[in-house]
Amino acid sequence: MSNLWDALQPVDRQPVSVAGETLPQVFWHACAERGAQVFLREKKLGLWTAWSWAQTGVAVREIAMGLAALGFKPGDCASILANTVLPWLLADLGIQTAGGVTNGIYPTDAASQVHYLCADSSTTLLFVEDEEQLDKALEVRAELPLLRHIIVFDMAGLQRFADPMVMSLAALRELGRAHDAGHAPLFAERLASRQGGDLAILVYTSGTTGKPKGAMHSHAGLVYSMRMAVRGLPQDGRDERMCFLPLCHIAERMVGAYASLYAGAVLNFVENPATVAENVREIAPTLFFAVPRVWEKFYSGVAIAIKEASPLQQAVYAWGLGVGTRVAELVLAGRAVPVGLRLKFRLARLLALDNVRKMLGIHRCRALLTGAAPISPELIRWYLALGVPMLEGWAQTESCALGTIMRPDAMRPGTIGVAADGVEVRLDPHTQELLMRGPNVFMGYLNQPEKTAETIDKDGWLHTGDVGTVDVQGFFRITDRMKDIIITAGGKNITPSEWENELKFSPYITDAVVIGDKRPYLSVLIMIDQENVEKFAQDRDVPFSNYASLTRAPAVRELVQGEIDKVNKQFARVEQIKQFRLLETQLGAEDDELTPTMKLKRAFVQRKYADLIESMYRS
Image (cartoon, rainbow, N blue to C red; front, side, top):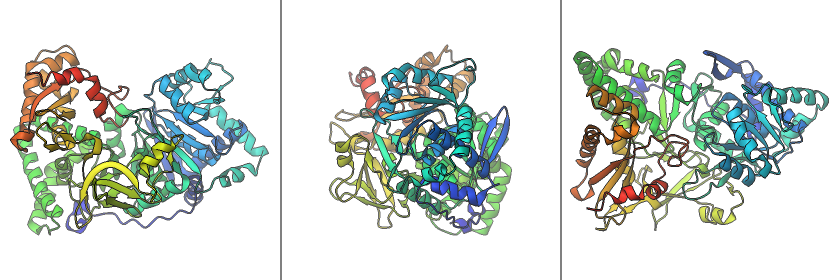
């Protein structure tokens, strides 16, 4: 495909090979090889600051030696409670270099959750981002007898704060420098203290069906997954990557941070979650990984902007997108693009499509990567029509973010691609559950041998809980989670994600949960896109005072009904959505209804909004 279309022409990337049996060994070999090359960038006070590999190595060594000076031993666990900031990665690498185990905690977690995760992981040392996160730690430290030290990244507002258990990251690094000077052999001893089979990191699941479970990943599993990920999508020091999703989630940790570490790509940390759209335009990444909600938001922004454009601009965009769509259809079919159509596409890019790509910040992207949740095939086709391939992958926390991947030369929207290099994927012949096996599969759940036995069978197959199909060419398709399949009162099997993905393609709908198990018909709970719906209401003089009143406005309900009607046309009458309700609360990452990757928790939502759901069936 790539040789048919200039937009998909890949930049040559030489295979990357970095020695090392453990993740810190790989990191230190990379530092030795890359030295003055730029590894990390962060934006502070409006300016981008670069960190070379050598500078990063100095910081990581100081942190590791500082931990050793504090009595942190090989095999001890340290947790990190922070947003996705550059010191997060420095702390992670420092912990592992010191021979420890890293556990990430979501910054949106409440103090009670921080207590559970630190207690379950036997955390002895806790890194926190700032005063807000420190307050959570101080609230529960009396109940954590193993916790000995708390390290703070950002001391703003804490200049006069004094506590024998608390110190700044700067002070830890200073302590590390002094300790290193007097204990020269210690660094090498700590680096050699861990082997491939030893525990490296804990990644706690979202806990949608109970308390979070700590997935244990070995150094060998991390290194294997890094190598396979970079082999599947070649990248090197010429690539620009972004880091903005939660680092305690396996997707950003592996696909973003660790893949960049192995490949040598420049890893850019955004200022904060609210500045992602602005920062991506500044960074102009060459490879861009995000969850479907980000890609949906980008599309919605363009859709609304086009509606507000002049008739001429709308016509030019429609023509350009039509040309791009025809090219995309040929590319997806594996057919040659005629010279005349290629020339038209270049003109379409010049007049319209390149402007859209620059507006989104994806004009330099060789590929967009999506995962962690299902995405609409139509959205993939839209980005492809702009000239940028979107490659969908499927994996889990338990598989170290390695599973299947869509390859640039064999894109099939609606599937999750083929098994990634070095991974076995097959269907259970009885349940059609997707099973996975390989060195990437986790070691098990911390302190939960029964759950581990339920998840990994005696032959080493990971039971993923996803139901799907596979064709003769090895392309897998997820139909749904085993526990999410709906069987209506009439006996019809429904996979709700198919409807939900189509609904989320609307610029006015952020998320949706389809209901209907053992019910006479399908209904849906919908969360509207606040920004776009507010603009819709303002343009039509629809009165509202807040988010809740916006969801109650008749015009807004008619708008959403129209979007549902569009989706219903794609399905048989017995499969159509008959009722809907709008959630009247604007949900954020701190709300229990959402996972940290911004997916609605189906079971939780159905329990919490049971009365609202029942109201759709009373008649």
